[in-house]
Image (tube, rainbow, N blue to C red; front, side):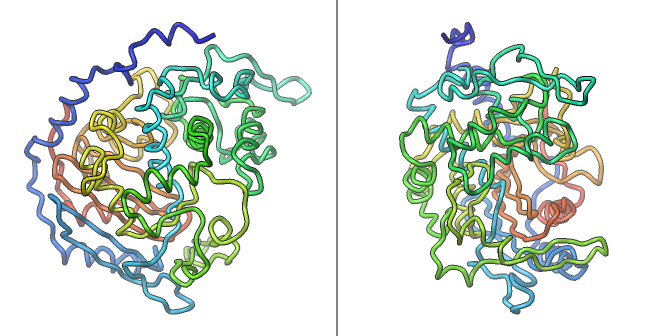
Length: 430
């Protein structure tokens, strides 16, 4: 039986009326930026060169479009330093969590078809999540104590990282249990991932915190369940092929392997060391069962720019429509309640909140150290320091590719300063 939350009007998704969301989007598009945007190619060239010269990256590239045309492309350094292969326009990069917005678009296509409501309990569609438990401390013998959730996990929660799931990336007891369960192992299929995740206690009560998690992998499982086809097949048919993203995918043919960038990890000495071929190729060029909705896509700068331009154009590109304008607007609207004050590292992204698989900027940069950008922009990034953003105020989209681990936010800070200028603050928020 669905809860009383089903009585909420579907058109009031994310707590906003269509008019309110449209007005927010339009304001971001039409406001005059506080500092005039001027693309300085030499400034971006210098920033990319410095990233390589100071050892933060082996190779980088940046692609920028403004007002419907390409205004900059540049690449510096090597895609594979040991093989002396330079970073080029067709270099294939592991984009990791930049996979998440692609999965989000897939799920919102199904929402447009009436397959679910945002405030439906997740267990209405994935019954394995009906009996989830929440971490409640330790018992005297050191075992984990759990309690029942105060409310069900809603689909809204898996869209904005408020479900309570962990990611196995902290020392929290529930995260340690996540590691033991290993739901994202590549030899599990998505249904097995779901069963294993549902057996791990939630880190917190649903709806009370923002915490980066395996929630988008659950989105992928839901896409598979609602569409009746494998996630990889659905995304190829309904997003990648229609947009002409010919090089993007989880599974890659062997003849593309020479174009794949190596990965580089910074060691204790601060120097980058090449990762093993197994680390680099395991998702895309080796047998696996899992198609993770939260990571795993390989792409190029031009391919991913087509996805970004589709979002800037409110769901369509070159005559092909993937989403309604109102759906993209909702995805790019902050949906975090002010009462959700526990937000892990999200505030480090800037003055903003979170929509559907996107950080959303709500206010101007307040300090010189904060990333430059415009109110109304939305973006996400990836574990190897990749980044893309959509800036409606300036009709701008940018894609930045790198292969540096662990994640290095200084690369994004320096690229944004180069694109916008160090003093850019953009339009004021409300």
